Length: 186
Image (cartoon, rainbow, N blue to C red; front, top):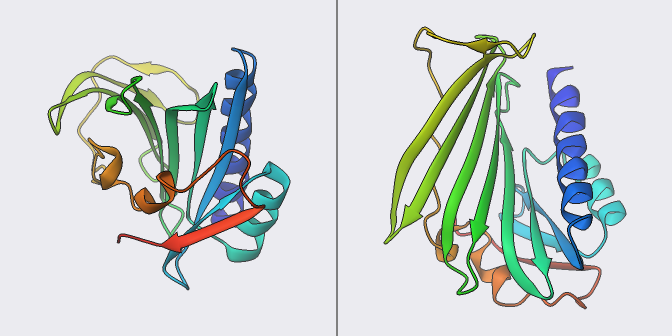
């Protein structure tokens, strides 16, 4: 049940992000999913194809590439625990030189009823945490002095080459085929 809820939440979150981004100008989006069985990442031209693939594969890691005027400016990744205990939403921002410059990370922990938001500045291959806040997941209420809890530790990709789907970044064309896959770096 937790797995189904997390999959639904993931799809809704990515759809909301796409809607917001499309309102900002001429935007194009490529949808990603990790196929753990075949150890590859696949890119999809349309959200409908991607959603079908997510449902069929049960993928716990999905993503999105957002382009403005054919320039990649945002990479979104969502990763969930197989147990359903946590989910992480990463939103990376790139400058016009395709350098990763900022990360907004949200970590939702179900057993701790906690949502932690972290902001990072990224430069020279290093991440510097610039902001952290915590909310009660069930109510959304800001926690002023939260007790420490365990948080999953996932890598922070400080360059585009660090993403597990990096090989797709060089080959994805907005006018691509409906589906393109490449071996995962992990």
